[in-house]
Image (cartoon, rainbow, N blue to C red; front, side, top):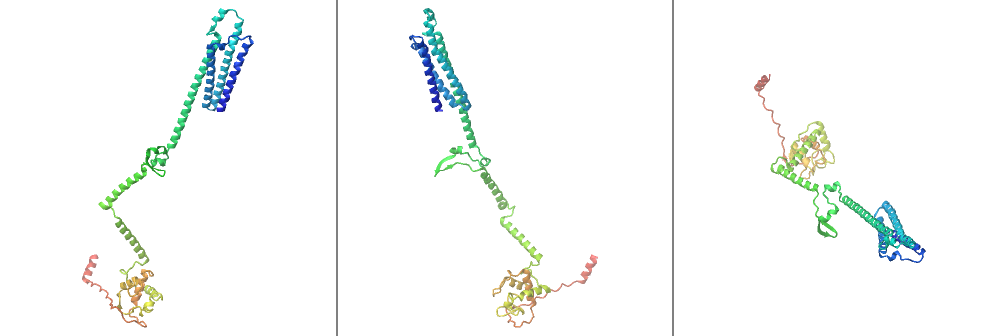
Length: 396
């Protein structure tokens, strides 16, 4: 742009120089120099004003071209070139007119007529041409100023629109940011508390809405929970829920064991009398890795374990005592078999041991413990025959 303005200025100055040379030639060709138009102060003032206005027009035209877009630059360039050409033509006519008038005046002898046709020492035509050129130049300058103002206003509006668009984009928040009530970066200055720690600034940001609402819901839930479980006791406490869960689990375990036939313990075990159970208990008992090591294969006992065939028992001789001893072991070195034998297997072994009473082992050990006598089975209640007959009659 700067190179273009320099080139434009050179062209204008060159054109002015050419016009001055051309304007001077007709005067010199007419013969001896006569009073020139440049000797007239008014004419000289007009010429200086025209030249100055022409230079101003060129400068404003360059400014207008620089402020416009590409198409507008081209259009304004053409218009400014046309304006310069018109102004140059008018100056040429202005500078050539006095010479022609001077030549006409040389052949005219009527002095009164010439005086009547002059204005301010210049011919009327010259005066009007120069005045017209001045007004045209002023008009062109005003038009250029209006166009420059319009373009500057347009550019300012575009710049403001661009800045607003950039700010809107900068301030535009995503749905996640709006949900968290985050503030845009452009508003951080309003949130700054003035505390700076190694470049980390402290901002007065509010907690996110989801956090606040969650906190409020926790408070409401805590109040309801406190009233229900610790004040009104309309709901089970954690301890009660645990106990209920354990009871349900235990019931399910017992049901499962009952279905498998193993739902027995030291309190519910009974003497098994079937041949299959006795034989199964014997197979377990005579296993070399189990009972024979302490009690012998025939149950007579040895240096470690007591005799199981007599009526003397250290920990009790009924089926429940024997089952309990097998299950949990004893202080005299008897191990616990609950982790190796099932409840049913322990009941079978206890029943087999009860069946050993009265047998004759090869080397029985001396009795140990206390004498145990089997309790007699309760007698069946006497039946009143008369009452029975009366009942049968009533039922019939």
